[in-house]
Amino acid sequence: MSNSSFIIQKFIFLAFSLFCCFSTVSVYGGETPSVPGTKVYFINLIEGQKIKSPYLVQLGLTSEMGIAPALADWPDTGHHHLVIDSTVTKMNKSISNKHIHLHKGQTEITLKLPTGKHTIQIFFADYSHIPHDPPVMSEVINITVE
Ligand SMILES: [Cu+2]
Image (tube, rainbow, N blue to C red):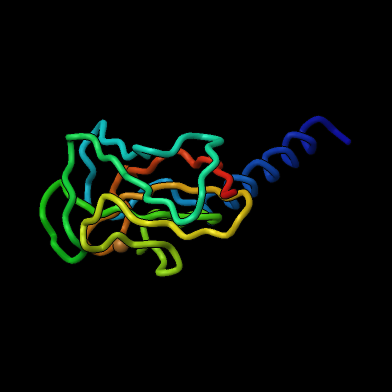
């Protein structure tokens, strides 16, 4: 194989890989801007924690933004979502109803999960359930229900 065809092959592979990445996981959120530096976090869950079900999980939001119920289009606000044993791939679309929407603006919720290992992540999103731009989300953490 000549050197140039090897480079072309490599380029095609790279272009295809990039296309796949961007077609499945978008990194940009919807039209509602987030405030730089905003973070969401678990107040009472840490990586590797063992819990009993039911468990009252508490969600934190740093002071750059505020909580509002779904459908309230107020500036610099949003509501929490919990993504369990799953992931959000489309950052510019409504968060699916298969995830937990704390649509009244709750900052805690009782989780009832089957025994075993689970992943859990907080996603903050705007009045229409679409992640902000840039998206505000927690790390994915691993928990075990005993
Ligand atoms: Cu929602």
